[in-house]
Image 1: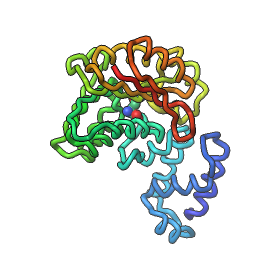
Image 2: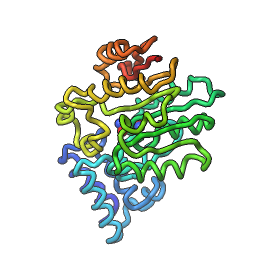
Image 3: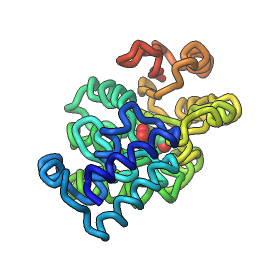
Image 4: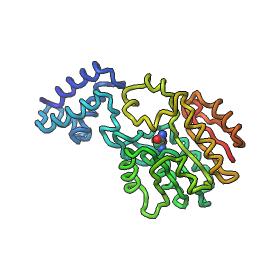
Length: 282
Ligand code: GLN
């Protein structure tokens, strides 16, 4: 079977499968290219040539995984975030573009000071690694409860950060462990904030990602509320609290922050104009 015929057959299967895909032809080319390790130049120069048996087997494995709804990033094994390439795969949340706003906000802080930062939910390490690459004098305490994320986090730290970086991984529950390292200058998170009933309506791709990293309770805001109360306790006076929120949670979270004692509370929009970040100072 030639590359061309494999792509034509696969494209049809993608169309029939109902997975998230804007351009089935292009997507099938990407799946085939990634599975057998061809860049676009080599891909098109072999377009009318036959695949080997080993290549067909590999390509079929990748296609079947994708047709079951596994995100493309899990097949490729990475996703770009800020300026770096993060290893991802089943068991870890795929970094999202909108989360880059947290990095932007953090980098607005004065770089010369040595700050201690706590993070709920490190995932792939995307936020902390991106920030420490630009602010190597800062100290980052990342708390991650999901053991399946750990191999990705470890690999990303090893590949992306220098050996003397002050990035500390704490495996376990933020609410139990973070007080041991308090007080912090900053507490930050992209926490789980999806309501459990909403999760059922999301795509197969999102459902393939770790539930622990996504679902914030029946209403969605349960973990956020707990996180806000704990952060007020563990921040230094004047310290910054910064979190990603669901686009419909702005007014609610602003109220919770103000009622918890935070000052100068603001909700900021993402690039598409949706409320996405809440911040306040102790
Ligand atoms: N910090 C990671 C991210 O933003 C993981 C967040 C999480 O587990 N909810 O992608």
